[in-house]
Image (cartoon, rainbow, N blue to C red; front, side, top):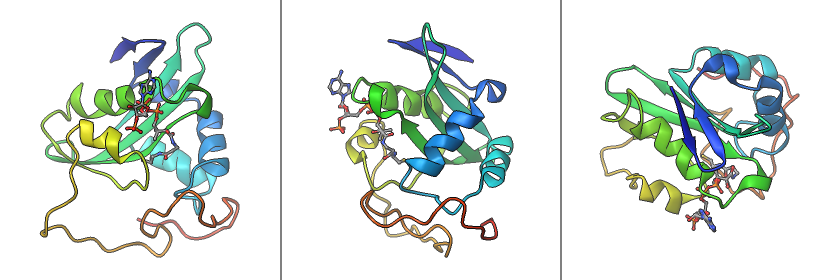
Length: 163
Ligand SMILES: CC(C)(COP(=O)(O)OP(=O)(O)OC[C@H]1O[C@@H](n2cnc3c(N)ncnc32)[C@H](O)[C@@H]1OP(=O)(O)O)[C@@H](O)C(=O)NCCC(=O)NCCS
């Protein structure tokens, strides 16, 4: 499924994902999930229920991304949402999340995510703080989302994968 929004094309084709670019962002710039090796990220990509890439019209460069984990029927978890710094505040982040959750087979799902930033963006797409029924068991490898300025473990640090 492909949709054009402003200066980008949104595509859920796994084969189109620029894996080196994804690895570069997630290992060098992301404030979350820095325990992951490239192999783990590749495996997460391969097992994703759906991905959403934003590709610059003209250059074709991947300037944003998101992936979802889901049972394919009722619940889904949104992860690794980002846009490159040079294209931020142009609506591309919103378009990626909208494409993922509203435009496609997950439109009626319960969606979940963790994020320490951009709460306003997610609120505009219907995300709200969980009610008192929501529980989670944090992973020792991926603790609760922390502020971007906090210390980040190196991506090369080898640890076992979280499930
Ligand atoms: C969070 C992130 C994905 C947002 O991407 P983005 O492309 O900047 O998203 P948008 O442009 O749709 O929206 C971002 C802000 O720009 C504003 N904006 C959108 N279009 C705009 C425009 N044309 N002019 C000015 N501002 C604009 C939005 O209202 C939004 O404001 P808010 O932060 O007050 O809600 C991006 O900043 C990012 O990758 N950050 C680092 C990674 C990260 O923190 N990921 C979240 C973890 S899930």
